[in-house]
Each structure stands twice: as structure tokens, then as C-alpha cells.
Picture (cartoon, rainbow, N blue to C red):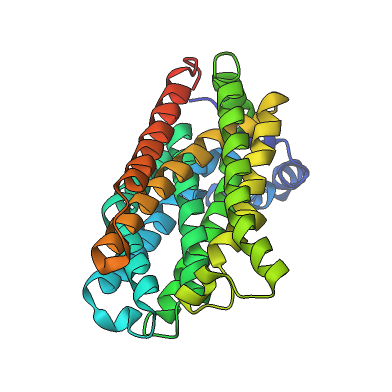
Length: 323
């Protein structure tokens, strides 16, 4: 067998060449010469070669997925079946928390687990869907960590929030924007997705700001803040600070055909599909808790969840074979 490239490079290294000259003149026995050769080879060879360690072995997505799935499942099970979890919350907040826990346990956990395993095996699309699920969890666990009154799960909330953030952060370098752009740029419905993101951002901003601005002008506290017994409406804060800017930035990137836009689009579509399903669950549980069952509103969120899922499927189906 021939030498590997890094082996040939090592044999041409200065330490190896100097050792070869010294061995020729020293008259060492064959056994001692073999030991010297091994030692000089070790000095001449880098400790780690890119070819010796697969990229997969450094990918944090598998272990982080397992850890996050366990933490989210624990949080959801406790929220649904352990009354002490939301004992200090208002009835309104308790109903919303249980509704979110139902979606987390029966929808988000399977999505996260399946996409995480597929991404670890090399699927670029699965990694983007996984990032979308992480974005949804980050959004929700900011509310859990800062909005839910102190309870026995406080450290679970903190651990889940931190893991979601850092797992997503350290997973980004494993996404090749060039590969994503080559796969989706030629045929992806970029304009359709961009317009949907911009329209949704505008409507959501109008909905959030209407209550907040009216309360500021009248010098009162928003009704949503009173109902949840929280310092602010965390949903409005997260929408205006993170979600809506992300949708607008992605839309602009898609219009300008930037590789980052093609990568962010499926992740945000996955996030929006999950979030729409969560809103449908919240409306249903709150209706059963006595806050009024709005069937048209529930139906609209179900339609949105299906619409985002279909748009994600269509976006993916337009990818070229290089994906």
C-alpha cells in the first residue's frame, strides 16, 4: 500500500530527514533504529489530521437533541399532569401553559428527534427543520424561564433555554450556505415565501402594537398583561425583538437571492408551522377552560399550520438533485 498524503508529508519533514542522516551515521542496531524511527515519525506527524476525524464526530446535534428532547418531555409531562407546575399562575396563564406543553410533547419532541437524527446522518434539510424547531423552543422557553413563577422546574427551564441557544449556535457552521443555495436557488418559490413573511410580519406587528400603543396613550396596563399577571407581554416582546425582524430579514435576503435567505426560509417555515399549531392548541384549551371557544379562530390557526407545512413541502420539493 502507498503512503497516505499526510504520511508522505511526515516522511519529508525536517525532523524525519535529520533523523535519517543521524541513523545512517550512528550504526544503531535494527531494533533500536526501529524505535528511533517510530519516535521521529511521531515528532514529524501532526497530532490530528482533518482526514482522521470525521466531521460527524464533532457535530453536537445528536447529543444535544437527545438532551433537549428529554428536558422538553420532562417539562411538558410536568406541565400537563403535575398541578404544582402552574400552581402560582393565573387560570389564563395555566391554560396557555398546558396547551403549549401538549404541543411540545406530541409534536415538537417527535419533530426534534427525527430531524436531529437525520441531520446527524447528513441531511441538510433535516438540519434546517431542526433549527426551526430550536427557534420555536427558544421562543417558548424564554417565556418559561422569565414568565413562569418560581417552581421546581426552574433549573430545567434554564437548562433547556441554554441548550437550545448553544446547540443551534454551534450547529450553524455545519450548514453549507453554498450547498443550500445551489439546491434551492434555481427553483425555490423565493418570492412567494418572502411575500408571505412580509405580510405576516406586518399583520402581527399591527396586532401586537395596537394593544401596547393604546395602553401607552391611555396610561393603562394592557389587558393581556393583567390576565397573565406578568410584568410585560412576553409574546409581544419576542415577536417585535426577534421573530418579526427575522422574517423581514429573510424576506429581503430571498428577494436579493442571498444564500442565507435560502437556508433561513425552511427553518422559519418549520417554526411558523409549529407555532400555528401551538396557537390552535392554546385557543382550544382556553375555550375548554371557560375563556370562550372561538371555532373560526381555531380553524384559522389550523389552516395556517397546514399552509406553512405545505409551503415548506413545496419549497423542499423544488430543490435540485444536489440537495
